Figure 1 (cartoon, rainbow, N blue to C red):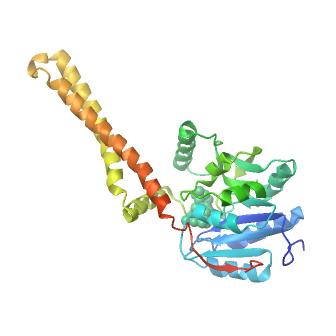
Figure 2: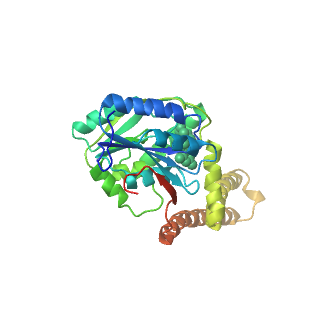
Figure 3: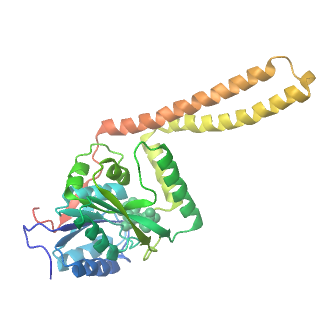
Length: 319
Ligand code: UDP
Ligand code: MG
């Protein structure tokens, strides 16, 4: 059994966030450990239990008891998938660290290819999704998102690359030092630079259960956050601004046509005034709302709350 003796540093750390995956965990255990053993390198697997409400923690505890190479970080509640990855990054001991989802959409067998590229000298090797086996709506939403992000981001973020990636310890050290709270790991990963390469990889179907991030949940999460932390007024300004800008554009077109085709029906100057008032009002609200979006994020940063809280650690050598 290739593995890590106490105190020995593994070559690879694999971080897997887990939220309500009790049906998938045994299969993940089998396939991931199988793939890693085939590779024949020393490794540790860090499962991050992100406040699962099902029996995931019990399954993980059993895995840990059987296999000294598996470790668990147990969060005090659900902090989200990015926070889970980040917690893992902070505790990863490997010379290279791999992030992957726990639903087997990221195939463990691809780890060998990631490692091979790393050995060629790349510090970041990320998987690019060749095919998404998700519904049309979700695929379109993702595709729109990545295109929008690419067009407005000030760094080069590769298209269709998710979190599934290998990072050299140097990159991991840098990411650990990042102080920002709203982490978007695949963005930070691009931001740090180094030699990076994308590796086309099939994204499989989720092994069991429903996605923990449905589109509805994504929106609801966004809304929960809004209500709980109350940037609501700011966001309302933004939405109102959008609506009013849209309506004002329509109205402006109507008034304009009216002015041209039946000028007798309306008093002089009315059209110009109406268009100006509507348009300026809309644009002002829109921009205030946009400022609010940034302000909200700044508020988050200055509070300096921890991104996650660890309740227990299982099987970490030095705790
Ligand atoms: N996950 C998590 N916390 C959450 C939501 C999801 O740790 O709040 C985990 C989940 O268990 C899975 C991974 O993150 O291992 C990806 O989640 P999911 O498959 O739902 O996302 P999708 O594939 O739809 O992007
Ligand atoms: Mg998934």
